[in-house]
Length: 113
Image 1 (tube, rainbow, N blue to C red):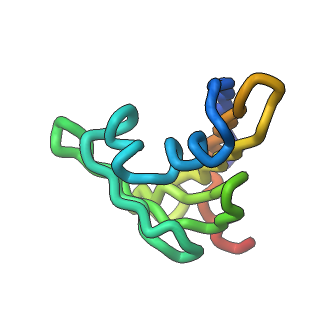
Image 2 (image 1 turned 90 degrees about the vertical axis):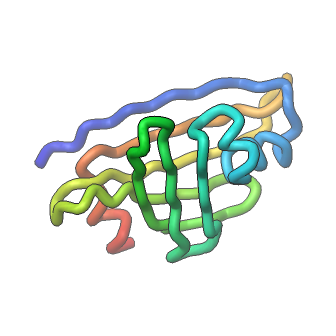
């Protein structure tokens, strides 16, 4: 399967620690991402996101390098499905840049790393 990639960045007027919390703390994620989020932020930990419509997604934390980067997979229930999401948080001149890359169809590569 060829890789598909979705990539986005945004600069926020926040200190790196506050931006890190915005992308890792379940209470913060519930403010802007989904109504219910559970994260066990350690290698092998689970990520569970429940949507308003009752649907949910689950994943596995692959890597954590606090406060600058974490990587997790979305496990879509099929052997070759899923994706890997990399979230980086880095200081920039006027705050912090949050950079998200989702490698769609690349879950197995992340788990092998």
